[in-house]
Image (cartoon, rainbow over all chains, first blue to last red; front, top):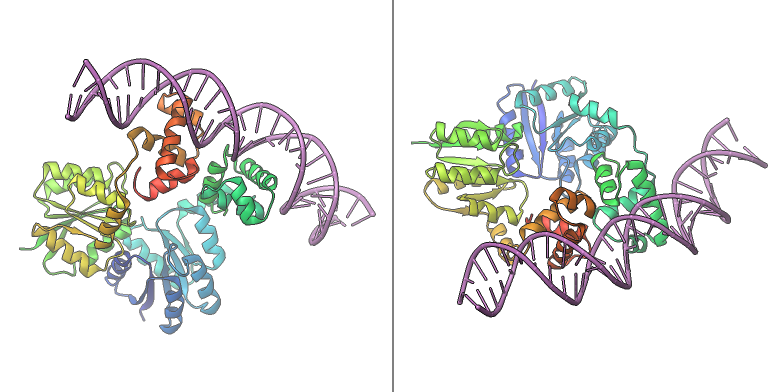
Length: 202
Length: 202
DNA sequence: AGCTGACCATGACAGTTGTCATGGCGGGGC
DNA sequence: GCCCCGCCATGACAACTGTCATGGTCAGCT
């Protein structure tokens, strides 16, 4: 009775490295690999996967979206998000999408194997540091429009450009930006967009 | 006669994954691991390393600086930069620092092993796609000061704040920013900082 | 010595941005 | 029904930003 695992990561070296690492564990069997989220969702169904290790940043379908799809179609498969950055925003989105585990790539291999066993037993595994940071941040105070204008602000667009693409008046965009700046405690649209992005508010 | 390899990467899973992957090769022996650049430079000297796999983003001493130090003190050790992003700027800096190879984490494991063997034989190994992209981008047109102010602009600091931390006048900072905006072909400090960062000009 | 280029600075100007007061519109909750 | 909130809009104001002209210092090069 080995645990059937799928590794999904767009970087070949990381993907194969994780697979090689897990193959050292007697009770874990890496039966498939995927380089993008879409492929991962297919392989989960085909290979009756028990646990899926999922990177966040992937082409075609990102890890969060892929997790949501798997949670809907294959609830028997537990998804563990394995990500580079300890973004609390990713954590919230991942759990909302139905992920059963969340670890950063900085954790030692032994802990990853243990996490796989735990989620397979039905437990949840979340990096404790990240969980604490997530709690201290509170919930997203931004309205939909504010998120939208902040996303554009992130790319360095001017007010006029944002207003044009969103079919709004320049003044309205400025108002949304202003309130977003207040809510994030920033002094700039740039800093507002940065902190909002860090906290996963976008 | 096996090749003695050191793996330096701050993310434990990636580091151990690479080690596990390379241990499958008969002629390659991973004899040490480092979580930061400083430790890597020490281990290279202690373990008479043949080839060092080096990540770019690391605490204490980044991969580029560590490469430079190793190239000076242990010229017998070949350094291969293994990085996530195909930033052409990193490539140039790495080669200037004395790296003998440059591969992205998207390359398959077999190619990585082959790259290790090649640099051990004295050859250079550079991702061909990246080399081409690097040539098409041209050289960094930014002066030192312009890079500096752009780095601060990236975080959303105001002109006054940048001027204060750099012990300059606000007008001077504006001038540097303005010329940086011209050189990058942007319309904003934000867009200028973004494109400069993408091309590895910072 | 003369030239060039990076660097620093000042002052002036137009344009953009952040803030505020004010108001209209629509949906949800008490 | 009334109130609150998100959304959209306008106008005005102060502050900030990007550009330009000008001029100074200093190092390197011919």
